[in-house]
Length: 310
Ligand code: CP
Ligand code: NVA
Image (cartoon, rainbow, N blue to C red; front, side, top):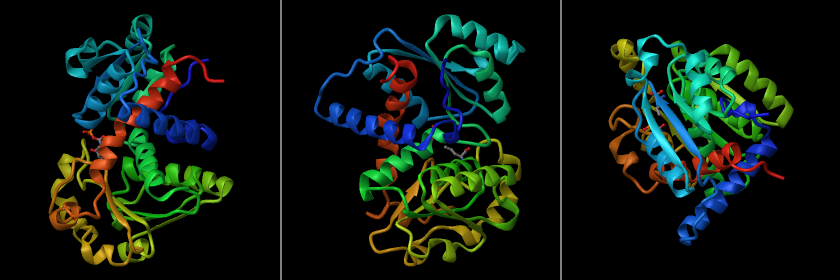
C-alpha cells in the first residue's frame, strides 16, 4: 500500500528516526561526491498554489541528485485553476508520476488529493502543517546536540502551521517543547489535543502559553517564523501590532541555555519576528536548516518513491 507524508503523526517515531538516519547518510554521500541515483527513472510532480523558494528548490534538486526528475506545476497554470477537480487531477497524475508534492491552502485539499491518488503524496505546506520543514529542524537539532529525547526547545510567535508541526514533532520525539503565542494567535485546539495525546504516549512535555521569557528559560534552541503567513495578508496590520512583544532578540536569547541557537524556517523579516543583529549572528543556524532541507527531503523521497525498505 502506498504511504503519504501529510503530517508528522502519519509516521511512527521509529520510522521518523530511520528517516533522519537516511538523511545523515545521504548528506555524507553528497559531501563525499558519491553518486546516489536511488530514484533513477522516477518522476515527482510538484503542485504549488503558494510561493516557495526552499521547498521547490530542495525537492527539485533532490530528485535530480537521486537520478529522477521533478516537474514544477503551478496551480494557476493547471486545469485545477479552471475547475478540474482535485480528485480527477490525482487520478490523472497517478497514471504518469511516481509521487506528488503539493503546497496549498486548506489541509483538507491535501487530504482529498492524497485519498484519490494511488501514488505517495507529500505535504509541501498547508495552512495547518509544514512537516517537511519541521522534520528538517529536528534533523538540524539532532546533528548539533544529539539525542532529541528530553531536549528543551521554544517556539515563539504565531500558533501557525509551523507551530502545529512542531507540537506533533516534539511530542513524537519525547521532547520538552514550549510554545509562546499572543492570546489571539494560539494553536488550533484540535492539533493541541492530538499533540498532547502523542506526548503522553512518547514521554514528551508540551507547554503552551503567552509568556516568551518563561518559554525560553533554559532551552537549547529558540525557533520563530513570520508573523504573517501566506494567506494571512488581510490581517497584517493587526498581526504586526499583536506580535510586537514576541520579537526574538538578544535579550530574550539571554534566558536560554549557554550555547543556545536561533532557528527560523525562512523567509525571515528582520526587525519583525527577529532582530537583524540576532538573525545575522553566529547564534543563528538558519542557513544550516535551509541546507538540510535538501538532505532530509531526499530521505523522504527515497522512503516514499524508492524500493520498499527491509
Ligand atoms: N521554509 C520554507 O518552506 O521555505 P519556502 O516557502 O521558500 O519553500
Ligand atoms: N508559516 C509560514 C511558513 C513559510 C515557510 C507560511 O505559511 O507562510
